[in-house]
Every structure is written in C-alpha cells, then in structure tokens.
Length: 234
Image 1 (cartoon, rainbow, N blue to C red):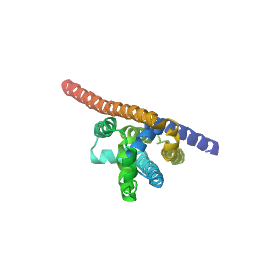
Image 2: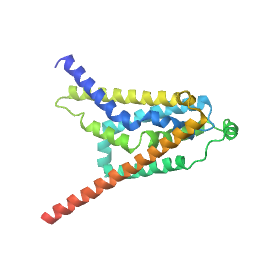
Image 3: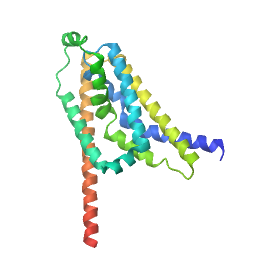
Image 4: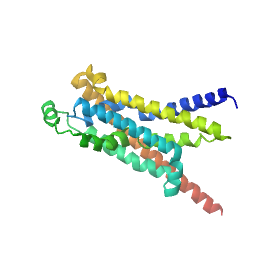
C-alpha cells in the first residue's frame, strides 16, 4: 500500500469530517451568545473559558467519533432519544437568552471581580460547550462520521481516523478563535448592533433546538410505525 493512498484517505477523511462538523458547531453564531453568557467576566476569564470550551469540544467529539456508537449500544440509548433530550436543553438555553434583559454596563462592572475561575470552570461545559456549541446535532454528526471510518485494512482505518481526529482539532481551534476574539469581532457593531445580533442568534438557536427535537420525534414515530408494520405482517 503506497503512501499516496494513505494520504489521500487522510485528506478525504479530514475534509469530510470538518465539512460535516463545522456547520453544526457554527462558531460565528455562538460569538454574541458567548459574550452574553459571560457578561461581567474579565478578558482573562473569557480567554480561559474559550480555551476550556475548545478542549471540551475536542474531547466530546473525539469520544463520539471513536466510541460513541458502542457506548450508546451498551447503555441501550438510541440516537433519537439523544436528539430529543439534547434538543430540549438547546431550547431551554436559547429561550433564556431570547427573553433575557439587555446587559447593564454598571451591573457588569460590579460583578467582574466575582467572576472567579471556579465559575469559569462551571460554565465551560454547561451551557457553553453543551448544548450551545457541541449539542446533539454535532454529536450525531460525529457518530455518523465514526461509522464511515471502518475500512478493509487496519492501516486504511487508522489513516481515516487520524484525518478525522485532526479535523476535530481544527474545528475546535476555529471555535476557540471565534470565542477568543468575539468582543473584537462585534466591537464595530456597537451595543445596539451586538444586542440585535445576539437576539437573532438566540432565536436561530431556539429554532435549531426545535428542529433537533422534531428530528428525534420523527425518527421515534417512524421506528414505531415500522415495528407495527412488521408485527402486522407476522
């Protein structure tokens, strides 16, 4: 087996994985929400949060890619159930953002010192990593990609796996850059423009949550109808 074949499989796996996961993560849309959820945090705290979110995304998607299907089968949890449960979390997070009051500058300044790194660690996973960025859609996409990695030989499988893991690292780095420089990206919009963009992003996130729940319900109902049809035939 030539090196060119391995590099070709690596490249295809890398492009397929990043093209599948990056739209699901959608880091630019998360930037204004990230700023809102970290109201009152210092620059260093936000930088630490962005780094931890990036690491969490890499770990979660990596596990879902490599062993996600095995874990779900072992626990007896179906993918539609994951979509419904995670979609409800997305809806709850987005709804809180949609109905949230506009940030008050003086209030933000008052709580800057209270935004400790313990609070940073507590928010890094929920809701910033899950379900805002790495939600059911991203996990489902990673599970789907993981199924396509198996090949005829161990070498080809390893090449595809390496390409996919590298793509996850690249996607996580893009997330980090968007969150790390979110305030700079949104500075030119001003307070009003940022507030409008945040509301629109929150609404899109809400719609995404509803869509994820609907996909889960649709799959459950479809499976139920298939089982009923099979039972009728027998």
